[in-house]
View 1 (cartoon, rainbow, N blue to C red):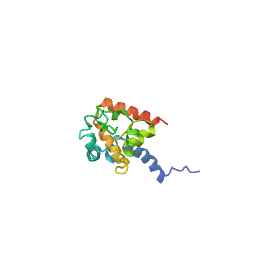
View 2 (view 1 turned 120 degrees about the horizontal axis):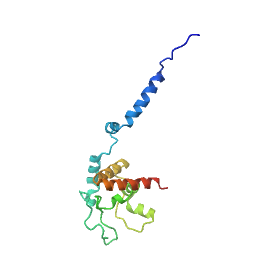
View 3 (view 1 turned 120 degrees about the vertical axis):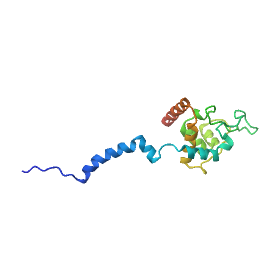
View 4 (view 1 turned 60 degrees about the horizontal axis):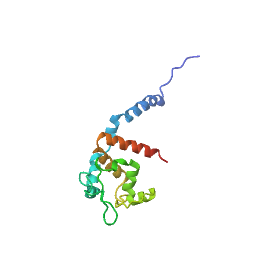
Length: 158
């Protein structure tokens, strides 16, 4: 019997190309090429248009944000490192923006009157993510790390 040489079929090339493509598409340069990194400029623009009038142009919040208004709501808190935004995980922050503060707090059983309106009818999930990415980009490394840890724990919760 004559020995046959393996034929180079159409799947042989795929066996080489597929792992190489996977490596290249998962590499950091792929993020830059495919724009998977946060669009901080878009987040900043959305923040300025939708959030800045209450939370401050520089994320500084209202000066008396810890003092209740006559109606029981509190002025808009800061989103900078001096505020409490970073004390919450990403899921909660996203939900708070999308559905509004009162809906989220009521669902959590928190007795607090929130003046935060819902933005789900004006902002897409991607817009909300861009705003949160922008806000987080202004925090010092330690605060970003703490908030990322809280987000990871929150993501594991049932």
